[in-house]
Image 1 (cartoon, rainbow, N blue to C red):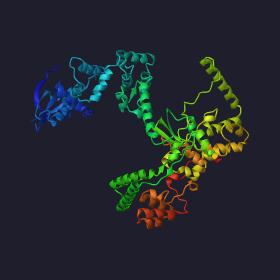
Image 2: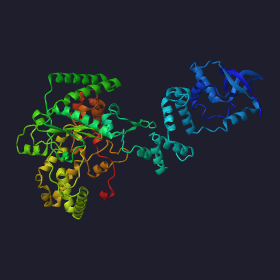
Image 3: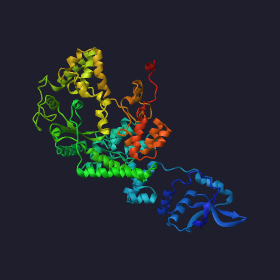
Image 4: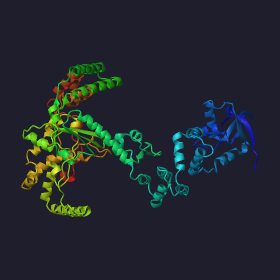
Length: 621
């Protein structure tokens, strides 16, 4: 065994030797290693050889083993936590053995098992040292979050940790089990599903709890839930720090309280009734509603709108053809403020509010308020020309109407439910053998979902939300439910009437009812995954030609887009010369000129052009 000489060498005299065999990973974990050296000192000396030039020693030394330690020492010196000439313990090695010793030191090392590191961190935190999370992080060069994660892993059941040491569990699986501190629960899941994936492990450990992604949690907020006394089971090993709420009853109470508070605000607007519902009732889709009216703006709003419009034109005039980011941002702000004022012109008349009401509910996207809803009885009275006072007893909230006597009264509830199930199965079997009857039931359920034996619903895209006034367009009037309702008898007589109609009449009713629920999808006719959408295929088969349903003019397009897009449209539809002729105009004159140039040209913006996809084979044939 060779005895090596230990000497102290100034840090400034050390450099990495070309003999050092470690070529990869030299820069990894330097900050963490520097923190360890700062807190624990240099536990192992560097292996060095003297540097020679022209047969003489230069006074400098090359590090043949310990290059990462040298980098960590230099990092400490750059932070002024260590003197640049601080003495460093080194083992001086003969030149002939330098390569051999460098290889020997970098070989034969066995990394510590992660479980041992977890336990060591726990010992520093909970054992005799009693170090805080921040103190451990500083001493070992890791973040406080990393320390918390390792402490959480150290708390996993010894049974699971032993399986981890034996490679029967992966680190990802152990992190999933660390979601709870309940060893019994961890071991129960492991005993039944020893090879299950991380998602299933978390699912089993959080049964009956509400995930942070739930709409109720997003609506109420985790902070409000915790402020009300709720606890959160947090996952330290996901990027979003997701968690679970173990108290769903508290969460539901908070949701109800907030919805009720919102309902009071809505009620103060003057509606005849306001209901808080867990979800919109099925009859909602058949209910009629009152429409907002156009009101005059107040003098203050009208003056503000005039100023905003003037500023918008000024920005565009100053920008010319090239608008800076600052100008574009200011223009967006000005136009948003102007749009908010214009929105005040659309409001409900007080008498319409008094005879209608609103639903307040919670959906996946958040709070939803539906205003101007007419109850079926109110709609019928309105059609008959009868007036009613707001707050009449005929406006009973859902769930408060007198229950009818149930068939099978006196039977044990489970047995009554069993008989009812047989009755439903029998009726289904009869209708299954009658395609003509099934078609009638389908149409009835779409027209009168609250009065049909079958629950089928077309979910309409919220076009009016994004495009106020679209229901007055010719395209939407082609699928107007009110127009369809005028073609059929009233409630209670619809199904017998449908049975007597021929197939062509039935299909003529069905087509607009189904069409009302169609959504053309993403702007480029693709799915979220980028594939061609079914809507694109449908548009191609239907020979969609938006020139029949929409026309570009100053109001519908040119007055609402940038000057660059106006010029692009004129160039596309009327030619380069026409575009050059309008390029020097201000925004409003340019919009009018573009409309004149493209009048009768059947020009469409790319968003409205039919998708370029191949039709189905059988349709092509």
